[in-house]
Length: 236
Image (cartoon, rainbow, N blue to C red; front, top):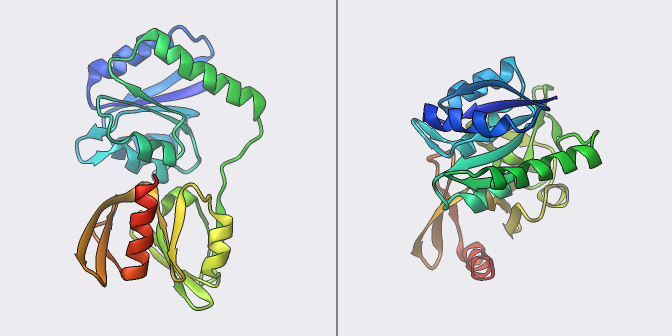
């Protein structure tokens, strides 16, 4: 049985998905909610296997739900906005459906999901178990990391929930461990998650400020890092 959560601020959209999913007897719809906060709370109480998730909702965007999930559910975005597709796939979305969704298009998504479940029945989400300076162990998923900066033999992680963790792990070690299609190293002291990069403010030859989804804090980079970022963006 595939346990499903529907997340859309338009009740009619949730009803539409319920009707379409009736074609799959192995699907059990746990419930339907209208915003990210309610979805996170619901998922903590009744963890879903699959989430059909709207993008733009009151108070937040659907992308912000992914790092709030205690265990990784498969996410399919259902939205009227094309602009978030790259970020959605970078955060591990299975598919990106544009409204109105047809039965034929949903069938393609479900076939992909069922094929993955059959071929990787025991696959678990990749997480990092971190030991902080206070001897507390925490599990962190790559999607929760905005950027990592080097502090010699230590690194400081900036996370989507606002936390900043200092760990005894080098930036080179992080670069080896994290998926290269999701994180790029801009210079010897900085690694960023490109999917969360929202805007770039070029102020001078030696000063550029990066802004990311999930935080109002800007990240200032120098000339070499800005040059590498421009080069990567030209080839993306």
